[in-house]
Length: 325
Ligand code: UT7
Image 1: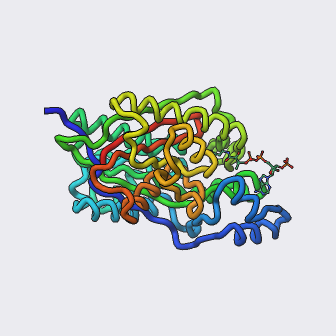
Image 2: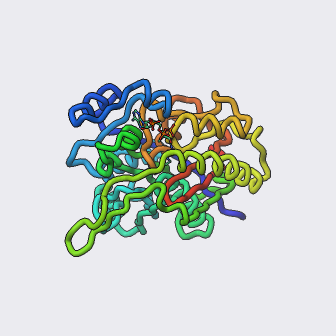
């Protein structure tokens, strides 16, 4: 009998400090950086974001999201036999945030690793976990997206620092005789590496280069709207489905205009798109599992429904996961 994987629990966590656009604008004004609620809302749809306290790391956020997902799946951490954390803001250069999370969950022994595909990270992580479950390499996986992007923002660059926030989302993915995950797609094109990157690195005990996020916003925007509709169509085709079969689109939450453009191309009404960017900002690898959990917990996403997750980000990377809840 074919072995599938299925999401059996979702969870998420946002740090308590919420900054509205007005709060952030006031903070930036101290350094003479001008922005406004109007500009941020009009260009991005973002109204607020959450920033973690200085001593809180990605694994701390991941831990809270994981606990919620485990409770929803009615499992203990000791039941988990694979941990993947998608993050671009790990606690340390090494060991991985996944091993730190494993320790904080009070368990040991199962494989735990990070996956770095920036804002597409959760899609990649879910696709890898699905493949491992299908082959029998794992049976109960914890797949997490966790980010503290506030740590890598240049608060003198108003074109980027108003866009991002911190948070974590998690799912439990279990082996199942029925799908579950119907199809996955992962893509990358490294020639666009320069349009969204943190170019610095650690060498000789020093940070070499710039350790803050650099983005050519319009170039990323153009590439994103191009690939997202295409990858949605190809993952649907792989599963023998069409846009009309999609109950919910849960896209990466970077910009409401990108989400609306993708939904329009797929002929999906705005009422079929889970949107959290207005309240969370862009939480990179955490944004899709955060939005999924919001949709599940507020009762919009129901068991048996068809959900299309899709993401795009630095690398350039992009991908999609089509699943039945
Ligand atoms: O998560 C990975 C994927 N990331 C994304 O998908 C992000 C994709 N890109 C975007 O969402 C948009 O390109 C941005 C929201 C980043 C920028 O929006 P835009 O409509 O492309 O604006 P722009 O960068 O072309 O800037 C337009 C104007 C500029 O002023 P001038 O040159 O026209 O006078 C900027 O200086 O807006 C100005 N501007 C701002 N003004 C007030 C840029 N940032 C701000 C700001 N507040 N925060």
